[in-house]
Image (cartoon, rainbow, N blue to C red; front, side, top):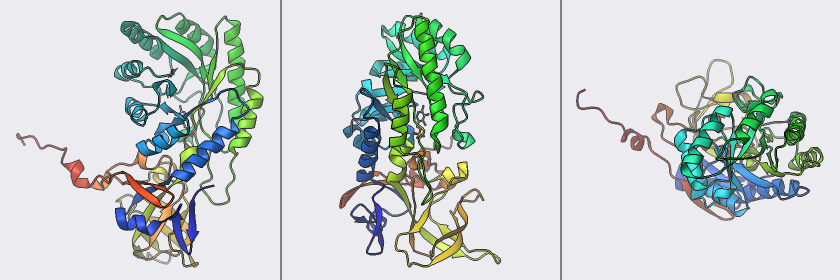
Length: 419
Ligand SMILES: *Cc1c(COP(=O)(O)O)cnc(C)c1O
């Protein structure tokens, strides 16, 4: 459920009519609903209520906006970060260092130092090599790094190949048949406090079965590690729950997920961590755009050219992803159309042969489900600048990220005087 609804024929974000935001901030612009973020955060937490003190760490990469992180911090969420930049943001949003988990295969030396200095709650180590490097840095700094070993369970998450992370051939984690040896080696390292294991098999999962399979393997691994004499107190089950991108599409609910987790982990005797991203933020945001013009092309449907493009919302170009497209003031009439952005690439296509609300030059429209992996993936390709972000709360709204105009980006460039 979200809070983007038609009222008197005009699409609103909570109590704010979207044309008011377009007027004040211009387009394209991302619009987030605080009430939706809060609702999703609570539904997810509620789904885990059968568990003993689960820790929920929002996957910052899904939506790193400081205002969004602040809303989630107020809901008791921590952060799953994958870079020093994300760690800085989580702390700037007021999250406690102890509530931060650091994932990622390529944590640099400087990032490991930064995270140790900050005193984060857990490092999810993705390789033996990373473990040794972290141990050496921790010893030098006189610190202890609390760690989980990320396992690659070799399960097919049945999602888009670019966001599948739990197959043997993916770069993530340590293969299951090596985890016993790697865990034992890292457990001997002074500077590391090995306390558990982690998995994350991919994103936009529409099926609980691969997750259950991965968790079952993790459960067996915990038993095996305990059998080797290790003390396992923590397990991190990652994120990955899919959201419906198409009206009417059905996805496993957080409640079904929570029930499955409770069943599979019943005997584990550990504190569980979760790293949801998309399920919290996806449907809490839209990308508001204006139609520049429409263009007839041969006998086919017209091209509707909007002022948002693949640099603002990369998912369609990157993953062939679907976003529902709706008029802000729908007439009730529908037309078959191709919806594209202005960028000089055929990849800059949001929809082909899509039956949508009829859209004409000057009309406002939205791409739905753009709150996760939207603004955060933006670039300035075609020198288009960075799209701004707005947070709505009831009948008020605030710009929570300014538009960065193309000339601001140009102004950091230098032409050397020897040219
Ligand atoms: C991306 C990512 C997540 C979040 O995935 P969602 O599908 O957005 O829930 C969680 N954990 C890790 C390690 C990730 O890389």
